[in-house]
Image (tube, rainbow, N blue to C red):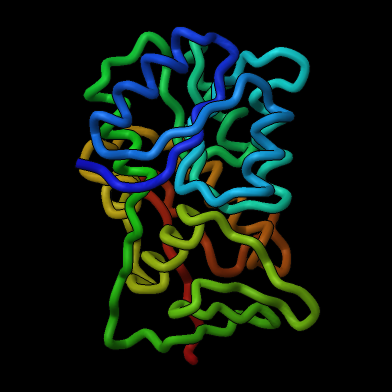
Length: 231
């Protein structure tokens, strides 16, 4: 049985009703919204552990809603859509989504995706300090905060989990599958586009020059490596 408060955003009342029944039966508390604007107001005023967000919303699309949510919230977001090309997935992830589910989906698949999104992974390493400094970027692993000399940097939960795994495993090649299964869960492993998007997002937040990265490096045909200087 799950725990947590989930916001379902979909303009189809039947889908909202089915999702509500299914999620409540699993132990989740559920609220719903019909439009992106309504979802934004709810997330601003109330605490949610997860947002299930349909892409094809009237007026403000799910993609637009996701981008707006990411301006002020790090709540995990799962995009739900009938479209399933790589371009569609990348667009959703670029907007700030943590995961992507295609309609029609099985209830078992949706529940697995929800559990993966709600995972709060803690990666421990005896060799890693509680804080790590990369140039003018300071990462506080205990507080799960990143800041520069003049501002706080907002990371989503999955972005921080990915960064934490890299910091726990520095200076070695890490395969795509290892990263996906460590951060998202054992059901993942082939979603390479997830890593491309998330690492690009992290580079923009911690690298001095995101297009010429110094820390988050690609290992051709293998995966990625976190090049950690001597602390």
